Image 1 (cartoon, one colour):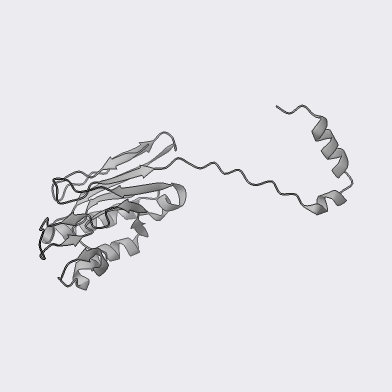
Image 2 (cartoon, one colour):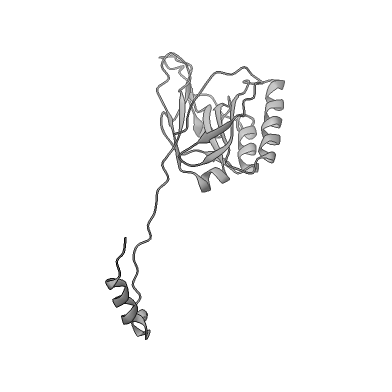
Length: 193
């Protein structure tokens, strides 16, 4: 089982080890990020993520605190969300066919911890995967209660591969074949393991 908990990173730090899952014989790049709320460091990190995405042709999971929103629906408070608050993440996700891993738990992953009317809740922490991941692996993400932090810990978990046995299908036209009855009789009389 591959599990990854959200960590704290220094802005500008990039971690891209290979993640291995023996149950799936899967290994591929994993990236963790903490983007600065604003400033010049963000541009270089987005450039690095874009370059990294261009070089990856296998399953890729990206987890961390993106410090930006994908849409206005990802924030709960009285503040207005502008296109400038969402364009970086939206552009990156669209360009590289990146999507949120299906998840449960807390929808909003960050809060300013205020208890009064000035409370702000946003979805800043994400577990993103590329299209190759979505087509070849079954996984689920969970965002837990924040605890002492203002962020909710995120967990990505690979699910066991489902072995699908196709249902038995009988086609009536088989009975019209000359060798149908002998074939069925022979198979019934044989010793199968």
